[in-house]
Image (cartoon, rainbow, N blue to C red; front, side):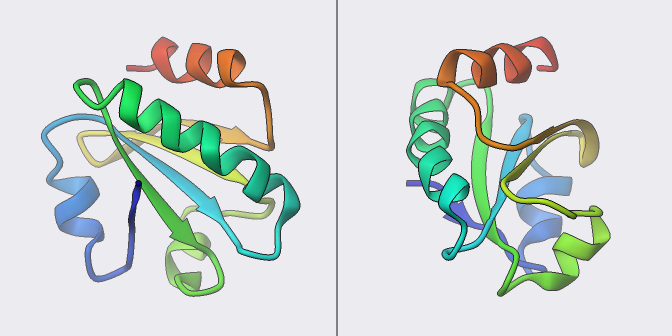
Length: 105
């Protein structure tokens, strides 16, 4: 299961990470977020050697959502060396999501 990302953990979990980090910005009331969540979890398990996956609840961590301009959820952001390298907005099939992630690793 993906760990929760918070403002307090961002520096250690994302900026100082030793591999790319995929962050799923979501909310419990968001239907497309709930649909995408199991796919994100699967990707996190299947690609654990290549990236780390975190979930960020936009209701609990509004400061992070604002910092990264989250206007629509679900939004996934791929970070490398603490920098945003790709942003994915909306729900999509697993294969399409994997293709986008792999293309930016």
